[in-house]
Amino acid sequence: MKTDSRRTALKILLGCNKKTCTLDKSIDDAQKELESLSRQDRSLCNAIIFGVLRHRGYIDFIIKSFSKKPIEKLDLPVLFILRIALFQIFFLDRIPAFAAINTSIELAKNSINASTNKGAAGFINAILRNAEQNHQTIALPDPKKNLSAHICIQHSMPGWLIKRWLKTYGDEKSQLLCQSINMIPPITLRVNTLKITRKALGTLLESQNFGIEPTNESPVGIHISHLGKPVTEIEGFDQGLFQIQDEAAQMVTQILDPKPDETILDACAGLGGKACHIAQQMENKGMVLAADLESHKLESLTTEAQRLGITNIKTQQINLLKATIKNFSGYFDRVLLDAPCTGLGVMRRNPDTKWKRTLKDILRLSAQQKKMLNAAANLVKPGGILVYAVCSCEPEENEQVIKAFLQKRTDYHLDTSPTNITTNMTTNGNHAPNISTDRSKLQTGDHFFKTYPDALHMDGFFAARLKRLDKNH
Image 1 (cartoon, rainbow, N blue to C red):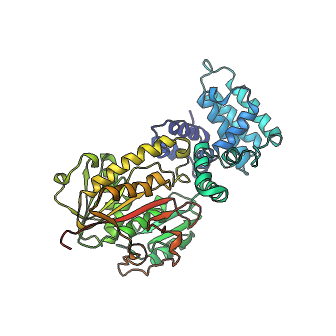
Image 2: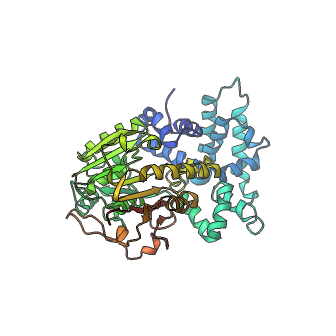
Image 3: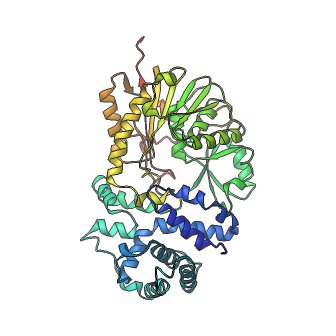
């Protein structure tokens, strides 16, 4: 059967709907189908996938308004075909409604087992035509009577999270967060200063007709627009001149402030974005140990380091919670713990997250983060630095983790030196740091680094820099 953009989008959306399957994993599983699409069809497929996930709450509100059958009782393929069509009708100007409806009916006929789901195509046709013709007759809940319900539908957000945000941030801040989360995020590159300066890479990108803007806070970042093709096809990618990394994630390494010839542990390295940045900051001198529980991630990390020309990274598969100093050759000058978290700070990049996470996840991961931070702390040498970071803005995963840690570990204190964010920016002689003077946007009164996705073109991140007491001083 011929592959097309909508069929591939349906496959990916059904895949990542599973609790245990991320959007990235579902996209990877459909890589062959994606590669067989034309560039235009691949772009449409991508728009449908992310658009359906970003606007699912509003789309489901429309479905509920015109379906006599409860949405919870609809078969998943039927539900997602409706979502795909309604996204095109209400959010994509360049696709006529009749085209969105007709292609969805054909998708239903070819994708749904007629013997087990009789009348599915007819049901989908009826809902779509009714919604397209009569959607003006439905209204959102009155915000004066039920603000939470109004925001949930208008901005397609889960109710439990909106109730938390309204209580924590208030109406205006909560709505700003929702608006930014549903926007397409900027593509941000981190310049590989081992090979090129930010100015030279900017010139190279401009010669390829990309719109670029230097990041304000990170001295090695470039925002890029008007992409029009995969990042892997940009001139300079194969040469290892840059790596994709959000500006907030870049700032975490700036806070760690690694130095050449040190021995540094990235305790939850994952695919290695921060490990490679650490190595870059160290001018490829010394040693970065990239540790992770999953070996396939470390394999990808090794390949990426080779592309970037990095030679001072070693990898080790290990469970941090079961590790002791005996699992390593010695203590580390600095340790980065980019801990597993809810990912609620990066929902604009991973919109499936908002439909999977619950309050229980925040509490469960917070408990795990406290254990992991304590384990990582045991690996730092006296006088050394420990940085805790998560891509979440939720207090249970942020300040509460650090405060619980400091109450327990009297051998550590919060490093409140302002230089750990503002002035200790390694330049490698290649560029001048471009650092904002308004630190209030990045650093809280408690000296924590915290960003939100509603400003500064950054993801939502939290980081704290801790120092282990030196018994000799």
